[in-house]
Length: 219
Image 1 (cartoon, rainbow, N blue to C red):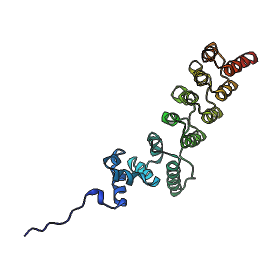
Image 2: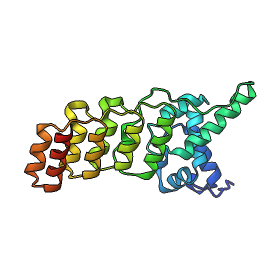
Image 3: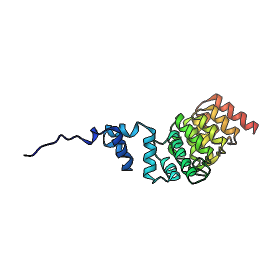
Image 4: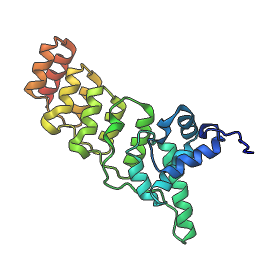
């Protein structure tokens, strides 16, 4: 006589098992299968770090550089990758050091929203030698357009160019009526051109017009 055993669905497995399934899958879309998988994959930073390391075969530098393209990547994941990388270096007798990022482009999505967590990550990447002028100077142009003064300041500290692509950063700042960013860009070397003057006049913005005229006389 046949006996039927009670069966359980995959989603009823312990969270630890679901997390291991996610890590071993190497598929970042896997959590979208269900809310249960989504919660299991997103509850801990360490799970995301482990997923990146497994996907890129524990090649730490590659996991870092490719991981940056993922929207879930943040400074906490970077620090965990650093720690794992440094442990590996120690095991081979090398001096521990942070994961390198010299002259590499910073992903554009980190500049598409005024988010403090993006600012902190960009700051770390710039300290490690990331390029502030990659993607045709997209970082400072987009930051000026969004009115992100802190990000503009940060990029200029690392030698971003304020006057590139037809003075586009200053143009966006004038369009956005952002006096502080306009002043900062001009102080950093952006020229007060006719186009910016016309935009300020069209916007009927007396303070902006006065500021631009002042800098024109000064320069």
